[in-house]
Length: 93
Image 1: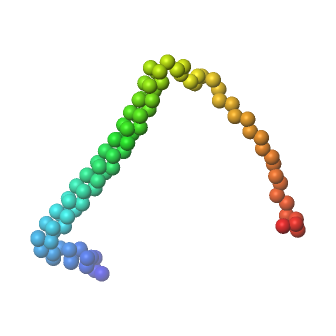
Image 2 (image 1 turned 30 degrees about the vertical axis):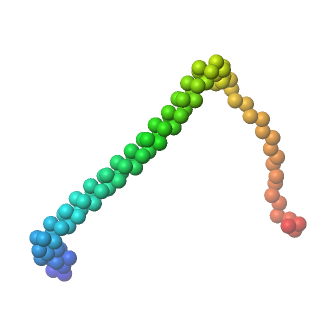
Image 3 (image 1 turned 90 degrees about the vertical axis):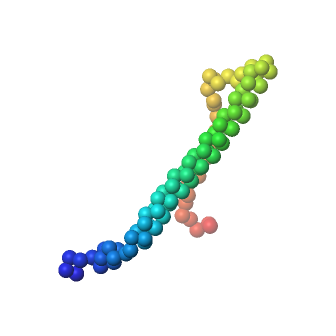
């Protein structure tokens, strides 16, 4: 190849109008990507705020309703029974 890159030579021969369009297209793509990410982050923030608002509303209703708050210091005990089944390679399948 004599140290030459045909692709780079081809790109160097492009007119300035093509380079400007490519640069503006790249800038437009970056702007759209940033705005898209901002929209997704904004929607996620609104959803989180809505969830926290509903939780706060339920907490305030329970607080002013005079009901005792649940005891969160008590340990949670779950009783589980299980059975160990051994897999055998026998003829009774």
